[in-house]
Amino acid sequence: MARAVPLRRKLIFTALAWGIGFVIFFPILWTILTSFKTEGEAVSLPPSFLFFDWTLENYGIVQERSDYLKFASNSVILALGSTLLALLIAVPAAWAMAFAPGKRTKDLLMWMLSTKMMPPVGALIPLYLIFRDLKLLDSHVGIVMVLMLLNLPIIIWMLYTYFKEIPGEILEASRMDGASIGKELIYVLAPMALPGIASTVLLNIILAWNESFWTLTLTTKNAAPLTQFIASYSSPEGLFWAKLSAASTMAIAPILVLGWFAQKQLVRGLTFGAVK
Amino acid sequence: MATQQTRSIGRIAVAPSVIALFLWMIVPLAMTIWFSFLRYNLLDPNPACSLMTPGALMDEANRCLAGTSNYTYFLTDPAFFKAMRNSLMLVFWVLVISVTGGTMLALLLDQAIYGRNFVRLLVIAPFFVMPTVSALVWKNMMMHPVQGFLAWITKSLGLGAIDWFAHYPMTAIVIMVSWQWLPFATLIILTALQSFDEEQKEAAQMDGTPPISFFWYMVIPHLARPVTVVILIETIFLLNVFAEIYVTGSGGRAGNLPFLVYHYGLLANDIGGASAGGIIAVILANIVAFFLMRMIGKNLEA
Image 1 (cartoon, one colour):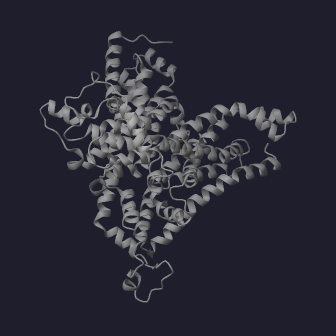
Image 2 (spheres, chains in turn green, cyan; image 1 turned 180 degrees about the vertical axis):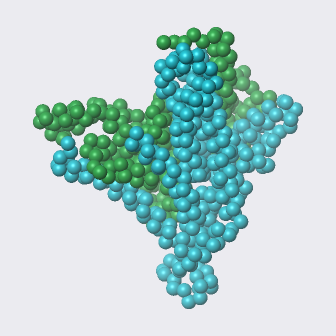
């Protein structure tokens, strides 16, 4: 039942919320606008907001000079690769813990979560040395493994909380009807689990895409994703704001769109199901 | 219900994840602990061992036992106190800003307003911006002392420009990181608010409960849990902030513990010292994690 809200109050709150929203979004908006300016206009004061000569040249130059597509494809490979690889071992684990819990399932889950609390600097030095000795520095395989392990606890947890919501009776019924575990998995569990798996994948692609401790310390060029690509623009060789903006826009746009779709999953995934 | 067969299949299904995570957790940690007791420098195939601990046994990588000297060295390094203070300041201020700001914003967005979903998109956006991008955008386009947008605003108001990263690097980092985490706090708290039972609200209204007591006795207790979750999760991530400091080149004055460890290890090649620092960071994080795990553990039971 909707409550009647005085119109004036509603208007005031609306204006306030829109204003704050605009301020928070402004740095992103400003980056996108600047990416369509010439370098001259990008640094001119007072700044021009909409009335400048819109140009696409920055995007061309960024691609040409620093090979955006290579870094972007690395980002895609690392994000997708690590997520799918993690899924491969996380789905059976979450399934088993949700539907055939043992006495220690809860402890096991908590322990998995605790690996996430380990600060990366605690592992930085050995991992760097291992990677150096195994020639894994700046390799796709190495980073995929790291990102996979980094997000595995979140993936298992998310899948677990989703699987938990699937009524176990349905599985029992199918078992009584003589379905094998394989069939149970494909025909009964999968259709019900897919939305949860999709949400998990979505959130983890976002996390892997933006991960910037390991990608900055363990990659340089060959396997470097967009985080490293943007970091290369930090060299103080002068101000190329329009190009920096174009590069930034291209680095964040895909994930921003995905993120807007994944708001709910974000809450659930990052709070380990504590807030739904 | 779970038969012997399903149970053993369950074990096989869980095994790969458990083994992977176990190795991931234990191998680097064990190595870090081991290195932290060694005199071990990557570049300097080094006289340090024979010089500083006479008669010490060196292995082929020129490493020798160093006792606890790495810890005493790291803990008495003035840079450690600075890094520790920066770490804690960063966590504290970002928490204050994002939690109070996030709560107020969530309360506002929970009101009946036009275009709430659209505003929520605007507010949540910074969370999806990769740290390196937000570092460079804030350092240049927003906070540049001459051409930055903030400089333009303060100058237009006749206040003069502030050179954020030169004079107030810590404040600049706090503003930037708060901008990234305010959306997270807002989203979590808003989600919790929206799960508030609509009937309870109506019942309170019909009973003529004044809005203030409703807020005090109903809303605040309801928010206690999501706010605690936000605080603990943010703390874990905030203790590990690295890219924002690295990319803006603020490590010298605003460097935190992770940055100091990075500096020791990969810039100064002092593996022993860096490992000791890493272990200290692990201990710090574990203190926080302890409380977080207890909270989530309780939730699992509920």
